Length: 385
Image (cartoon, rainbow, N blue to C red; front, top):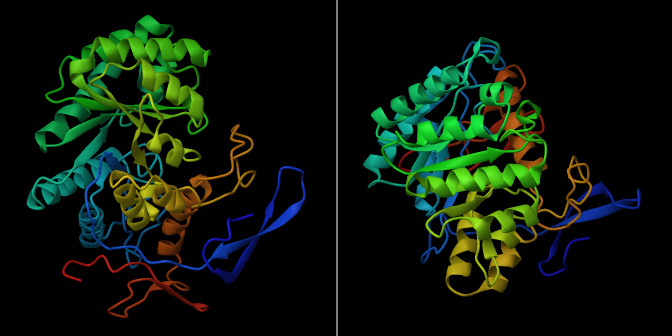
């Protein structure tokens, strides 16, 4: 299944194929990438970075977040050294997966402060309406006030905004005019241009019929209309629809000053490389897990080595029908990373809570997880390491 370019390792997986048979996927031998950016980048690339759990905190990790703030911020410094930006407190990362709004705000404040100390490193932060219970949202004005509260808090911290999709708006918005009213009002008040995140219902079923219609074609018309009407207030839009062609179509319709940030976990390499009519930038959770590889690949693309770019990112995971890839309509083998990044995010709090069986490795060069089967190493993100 994988291209025999690098020497293969002894590790292999049994994966289902499209014809319902089982194939052996043999992992390529490991390769090392620079720990800091070498060269320059001609794409803006954000990592929706994870937080590091405190495995010794006496809490239920499913109910109460316990964060190791030092290592969490150190990981962001590691990402910035690689030339990537940080997309903080995102709806596809921490939000909805363990962090409430007060903790998310503390994360944003700490991250923005660290970015300033790093020489104004790139960080945008999620602002939404998740502190407003959907059942408590009665009117569109309730949604607007909820957006305004989070935006004001992020801006007070000195942060830039990623305007996230709202479950409350999905509940109350009956037609495209309702969405235009909310977005136009909110965008008119932001201090600096924002990134709008269009999160599809394949990630969050509560966002079904977003933009006031069940038709994705009509929804795109509404979204493009709102964005282009507010182009001076919009840095870009992240599309998480897992539909390569829709992203390309939307990209070609955006105002020239508005960036497209790919959120397509299956086709991001192809979309970032682009075509003769344009390309996408990136805002991806998987750029947390593969930050060094992403940085190196993007530097190759900037240097004109598109083959080298695809050699790294184009074969991160050829998973075809693994997990929900087939169900979500992706038939293209290639850069399918959603199952990997999701597994990382799901297992992290579980590991943190299994204190009797899993403990942090105390080796000074490891900082991984020590289990009965040995140590699962992760990079050393402690300051000064």
